[in-house]
Image (cartoon, rainbow, N blue to C red; front, side, top):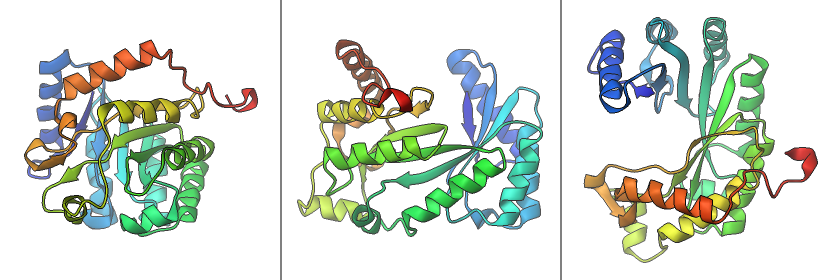
Length: 256
């Protein structure tokens, strides 16, 4: 199981509370300490080192996963992650979302594709694994563009990928554009078709960490079907079996 940080509690308290939640669901086991949306907002380097070290201390915590921006990895952070990597596996999750400059500008990603490429190189040079995030259904993107992003991520050397559905949440600029009719969200059928197309161009050794995401239901405007997680997972499973999905099947043999 994985658990995320709740800054209202100390790290050891967060770990124990999260493990209790996981045990209640599936009996527990081994754990990944997951720092989500982690940038330089946590303060000093010493503070980060303390947080990460505490999170990795329990014997049943087997890895550290830190989600951050590719442009928030200065040398001192890379060095810290490399030191921790000597103790247990360290993963860094990068929110690339798309390789297309027009879409990146629309979502105000704030950095060019070259910054992602450099981050992957710097992390791999220190023995740190990379998990890359991609959003399917971004306004203005065709299915071909989305598959192109997946193919690029697969070639970038990232060890894993998290695939997400675009959600429209209340109170966002995206919600205003949605209300103005500037774009439509994906149907469940279209989303799964896109998932399959992306998986077919990802190397077979790449780990698929996520096939969809679900936003807070109280803030969800669209698509409504994404609020029923059990239905979504069951339909993904059904379609994958019915369509005989095979990861990497659209890649040349030399790239599989």
